[in-house]
Length: 295
Image 1 (cartoon, rainbow, N blue to C red):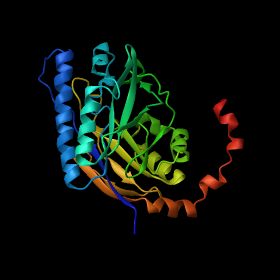
Image 2: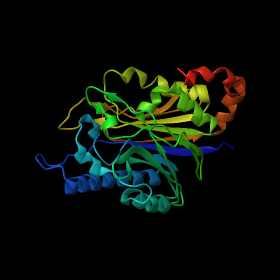
Image 3: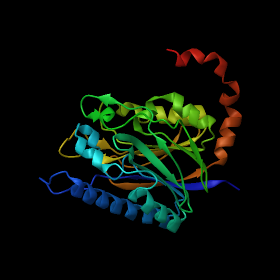
Image 4: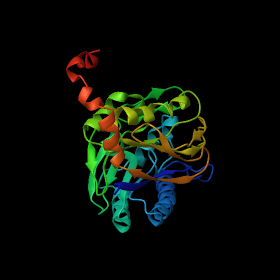
């Protein structure tokens, strides 16, 4: 009997707010409420389809505000797990018996912020969080060091009701070291919520993460939002969210430009089959890699 887990990814557009509104706390609260409402509708649909593990997109309840450097967006951050979004979604996870991966802007304390994903188990219990380790600062439009400290929690994995999962966030995907660490820490499925636009890095979208899956023998769920976001218009977020299996084969893919819930059955028994064929963990030589962290 196969060890099947139905998983889902949500790719959406940011809710359009009225033009000319001042970005203040009320604006931020209204915007976040509308984005949460949109995701709750997708989550209800996922529950109807039998999804057991569901991942939202990077900083899911706001625009990709890193397109500008403006400290007004600091007020969009929340504490984890005690902030209102995670508290709300704990109830949602329990209602649907669904594991939720919830990427939001985290405030650890005043002036200290992270790009973070909270992991909530199917009984509503908060299991922990992953903080994005690799922070880009690229002109134009990706001013992330203005908003986020580099993560300081390493590469944790989370034993959920249905599978052991890990999280990598957006720019992290360009670094194979953390992807390997997640595998060594026992991840069966790695979710990578992202916000990436057409252009420079698009050719890597279907290259790097399937390579991580194949090199480490686990499933990957890669999420990207869709549409363009005013007033910055740094480019088109091209969706194309997908699941790939431990062989690095894409087994389900969303559209390029539509809001969508992507659902796929992942047979966790494939992990054992692949790892028994490709003995990459056996044949690693960590004693020869010391110089890599000195360069």
